Structure formats: C-alpha cells, structure tokens
Length: 326
Ligand code: MTE
Image (tube, rainbow, N blue to C red; front, side, top):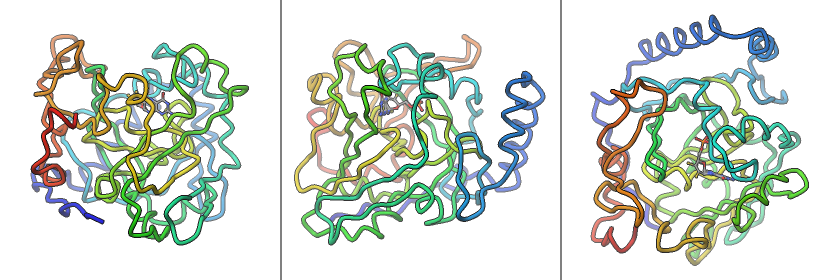
C-alpha cells in the first residue's frame, strides 16, 4: 500500500479556531435571522446536540472539534445554495430537484457494509460511525466538473480512520463506494441513463490521504438528504462527482473499480478526475470556474491545480501523465 505524503498546509491557509467559530456563529446567526417560519421550526427540532447512542436526524446539530486540516479563508457558500443547487441524479436531473425529492431517502436505520479484500467483512450502523472519532469542522473548496464551485464547511473525520478499523488486506489497492439505490424510492432515477447504483472509487493512497473526508454534516449539522445523508465521501482535490453520496457499501478491491461517469462516458470522465485547469473537458474548458452565490462580477475565477490542494496531494501523482490519467 502506498500512503501519500502527510499534509503540509501552509499556516496562512489555516483559520484560527476562534476566528472560524466566530465566523460560523455569525453566519448561523444571520441564517437564523433570515429564516422563514418553516426553517425556524426546523431549527427548533435540531437544537439538541447528539450524545453517543442518540439517533441523529438530518439537520441535527453535531458536536464538533476544530480541525487543523480546515482550509481557505474564502467566503463560505450559503447554506441555501449548498442545499438547493445539487447533483444527486437518483432524485432528478435539475439542480433544485434533490432538495424537493430527497426527503424520500430513508436515512434511519442505516448500515454501511465493508467487504472485499478485508480480514473480515464488517457492518457499521450510522451511529457506530458517528461515534468512531471526534467530528471535525473542515472547510473545503469544492469544484464540479461542470465548472461551478462552492466553499463548504463540512463535518466529518478522515476516511483513513475508518480504513484502519477495517483491516484491509495487502491486496487491497483501491476502494469502491456504492450509494444507496432503490428504484421504488428513487423513482426520479429513470430520468437519466446512469447505471445504478452510483459507484465511485479511489486508489488506496488517495483514500488514505488525510484530506479524504468521511462526511456526516455541513454547517455544524447532520447532512440534509440532498447533500448525501447520512454519510458520504468528500474528496476536495477531485471533481465533485468523485464524492459519492449516501454510501451503503465500501468495497476494498484489487483492481480499479468501475465508476459511474467513467463507465458512461470514458472519454469525458476519467477515473482520477483530479481538478486540473490544464486538461480541458472535451466539450468545455476547465481553466475557470463560477463560484455559486456571488454577485456576477465576482463569480468567475481561475481554477487551481488540484483545486488548490497540491501541497497535500501532488506527490501521489508524481511521474504520472495527467493528460492520459485525467
Ligand atoms: N452521489 C450520488 N449517489 N449520486 C449523484 O448523482 N452526484 C455527484 C456527487 N455525488 C452524485 C453523487 C456530483 S456530479 C457532484 S458535483 C456532487 O455529488 C455534488 O454534491 P453536492 O450536491 O452536495 O454539492
């Protein structure tokens, strides 16, 4: 197994805890102040902090700790945009469909199976996973292959912490993630020609990189269904489609696993899909991106190599031809 270089985040990238907390509290205050009656009701429901053993519903406040791996000093994308501008094709093809339809996803009880090249197959309930490690606030830049981007305050812990509990065999070279799929629940899935269930994968060193986040929440609360409740993966240096939502199976495998978009259109979506402004999508440039939610004159910006996470991840791709392994 090839473990990537440990993170080396420049101190200028690290937001001091007090400033971050202040920022988050102010944003939460503003959000609440602007809330409609319905949202205020929801906030009431979510006022409790989860204690070990408690069931966590979408929108429940999570107990979190500061993360040294939090990044960027950029303005956070609003909760409204993060939860109403989504790609979750099981729930429809328009950006606002998941917010309307993903309520149908049954997020409790929820089990994540671990199988394949492991000492012994395992199953974790969502509450086991929530208790496994302290949950961290981690702000990441997210870049979609469609050339829009957001800055999202996720909540989770490094996926490597779970891998350590799974005892993968030395023959495990890749990890595959499979999303929940039930066509009776996700009846909108027929709108696209995707092969279900949604499948994504990482090379083992990518999966073990501390930035790869097993994600349970955003803005300090459990994930709304449309963002992949109750647990998803987030890989901030890759295009957004690598970050599979609502995961039910984690499979350790010997060979590069089949992945949804690579299977559908291999010339457009590679297995690696690292954010790379120098390798265009065959139908559009990847040099620039539109930051969702900003006034139009501030929206467009240059896309950064590895989405700005090169210091932490570039070493994993040393010697690889990134035009070939896009
Ligand atoms: N996971 C599943 N199961 N189904 C999906 O359609 N869409 C992907 C990814 N994960 C998708 C998924 C794409 S294309 C993107 S850009 C991100 O989720 C979007 O995550 P967000 O809606 O939370 O921003």
